[in-house]
Every structure is written in C-alpha cells, then in structure tokens.
Amino acid sequence: MKRRLAALVAAASLVALSGCGQVQGAAEKAVNDGASQVAAAAGTEVKKQACALVEDGLVSVKDKELLGGLVAGAETAGAPAEITTPLRQIADSGDQVPAEPVKALQDACAK
Image 1: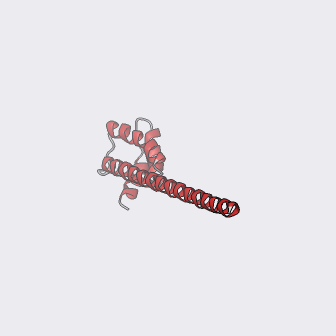
Image 2 (image 1 turned 90 degrees about the vertical axis):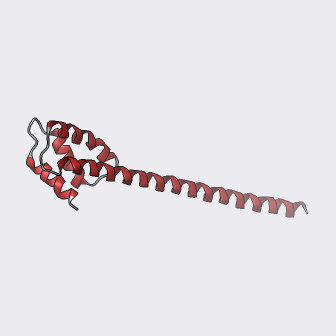
Image 3 (image 1 turned 60 degrees about the vertical axis):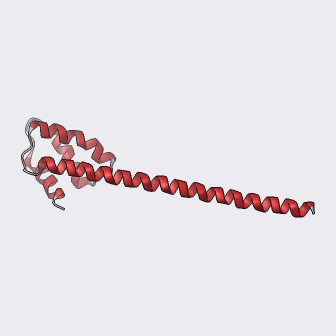
C-alpha cells in the first residue's frame, strides 16, 4: 500500500513538474511574442516618422535632427537596413545632407 502511494505521489509530482514546465514555456512564448509585436510596432512607427520627414525630398536642419534621433530607435526596433542605413548616413552627415541617403530612404518608404 505504501509503495502504491509512493508511486502515485511520484507520478503526480512528475505531472505537476511537467505542467509547470509547460506553463513556463507558454509564459515565455507569450512574453517573446509580445516583445516581437512591440518591436514590430516600434519599427513601423519609426519608419512612418522618417518617411514623413523625407517625403518632399527636402531635409531641413530640424528634419536632420529629428532623423538623427530616429536612428537608435530604428536600429533597436530591428528596422531593415534599407531604413537604418540612410538614417545613419543622414545623421552622420555634416551641414549638407547628401541627396543619396534621402533618395534611398524615400525609395524604402515607397515599398
């Protein structure tokens, strides 16, 4: 009788432990899915802001500052290189913003 009880307790413990692992796995998946959704939304928002600033092809000093501020967010959000590379080039440019990265960003925005 004691052996049966011990076996039942052991079986119940294994079920409980495997259930905990499943719960933990489900929780981790939910967190990862949520983080992915947040990153995707952030990337979309950064792209939207950058695209609005270069839509007319003219980048003012204020636009350049704003675009430079979007670089880190775009990179952190995992935005594609077709967005982050021209943003970085614009941010790193001197007083004169080169036309090539502006055009590249406009092209990426058109997609």
